[in-house]
Amino acid sequence: MWISLTPIQVNEYFLEFLKVDDTSGKCLFDAIIDELKIVGLDINDLRGQGYDNGSNMKGKHHGVQKRFLDINPRLFYTPHGCHSLNLVLCDTTNSCPKATSFFGVLQRIYTLFSSSTKRWKILQNHIHSLTFKSLSQTRWESRIESVKAVRFQTLQIRDALFELAEANDDPKIK
Image 1: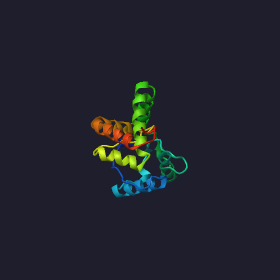
Image 2 (image 1 turned 135 degrees about the horizontal axis):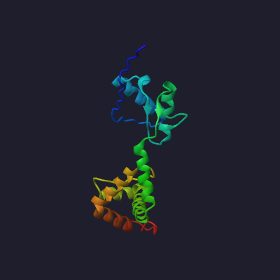
Image 3 (image 1 turned 120 degrees about the vertical axis):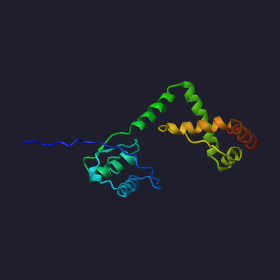
Image 4 (image 1 turned 60 degrees about the vertical axis):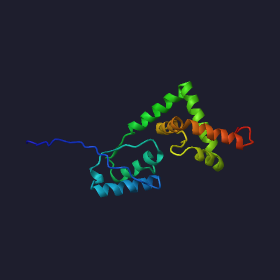
């Protein structure tokens, strides 16, 4: 008996970024399913899924991974490599005292302004294009965005800090 083997071809495609308002596992799953239908992919033909380490994505009980496995048990989950790289970068900065100090100062400035709408308004009055972001322990991009805000608007941020010090009687804020 002779069996003709057809070559197997593995394809990986980036579909698009999806805008979602609810990031629960169910809503994300529904958004992905809708997109798969639009592009004409049958979920039973899929063999792999990979996400970051968020419980809404990789969750074994209610995450997107579990919902896909309920429909197609051959859809193996692999942790997303880029997210692991994010974790490595974040851990690296935590092991360098100068980086820890630098990002600590950025986080304190962000916290100072963001903990009050009046203080946030002072900051907004001085900077117009880039704003501070809270630093995430798992997202390297949050650090990049905060550095950009300081790099390109150092004088404006300094002026906002001076105004805040003059307008406030609290010694901790000064």
